[in-house]
Image (cartoon, rainbow, N blue to C red):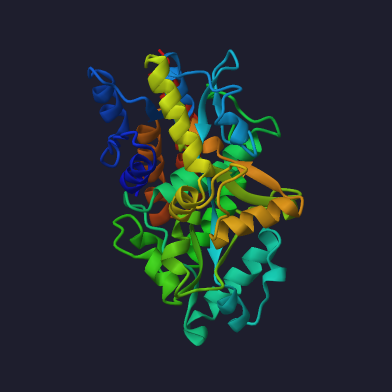
Amino acid sequence: MLQGIAKDYTAKTGVEVKVVTAASGTYSQTLLSEMDKSAPPTLFIIGNSAGVKDWKDYALDLNGTAIANELNTDAYNLYDETGKLVSIGYCYECYGIITNPDLIEKAGHTMDEIKNFEGLKAVAEDIHARAGELGFDAFSSSDMDDSSSWRFTGHMANLEYYYEQEGKAWTECPPTISGKYMDNFKNLYDLCINNSLTDPKELATGGHDAENEFKTGQAAFFVNGSWEYEAVKADVPNATMIPYYCGVAGEEKAGLNCGTENCWAINSKASAEDQQATMDFMVWCVTDPDASRKLVDTFGVMPYKSAAESTNGFLAAADKYTADGCYVMNWATNFQPNVDSYRATLVSALNQYNADQSDANWEIVRTAFVDGWANEYNTVNQ
């Protein structure tokens, strides 16, 4: 899609735009390679605090620039310790629990019953208890293979980190976490795996298609994000998204988890002429009706004043929660230290717990979650 946007811009302006795409999971290596070339990229991605630390010296300060002036929120921008605007969010996403209201109603319930964990638990457990009679279950599968585990070790884990911030959003990775809200994570995780189409003992190897289970009406709830909207809307046109209700006091005012790792940075080492050309391209992307329409239809929503409106129903749900005065759960999970190793340890611990849900095995999960954070932080900050 970005290749097409680049061609459109060249056709309109005569300015050539080259887009280099990295294979999945190789962005850091690709960027390092490209930056070593004689003509390095002028526009690149710095998507999290680790990226800021690694690349801030290569990033132009975007404070007060033309692209910054087009923003309608500062919520998705990344700064360094001096206040330099290192990278600027070009889209944001949300995640939570995708829900089929029609199945909720078929089970004799309403969405109004689901305003906190107590309500979610009551509905989910009733559906699961009557799955044979109803013809569908509560939750789709919660596989722990690489294609699925991130939904829990990355996304659902965010509820613990978010609440542990105690209203003061982290600006850098803390060296330790307390695990104060681990019981709340357990509340929701247990509900998902024990009221599902798939026995928890079968989750380790994966092989279950949670998206298809939801699309085909086999499950009322599907833990995932706004990027799933296009995939499910034809089969479940009324699909919406609800927050990670987990038993925290006051969670009736919780909203969805909103954030991004999609943030543009301009190469500070590029010539002033190339920097200006890059800035012009960025502004065009978020102000041109056709360009922004294509980008929004792909990415979901762009936080810019003149960008096209999103047609993504899950992002519309996020906006409604915010408009109703609910708090946004920021992506504190982006601070996970040595992320791949940290999550791999969590997967191992959760698989042991899934096979035998004993208190002792949950302590292994807690250790991986809390002590694992400190261990991985020390590994990358020696």
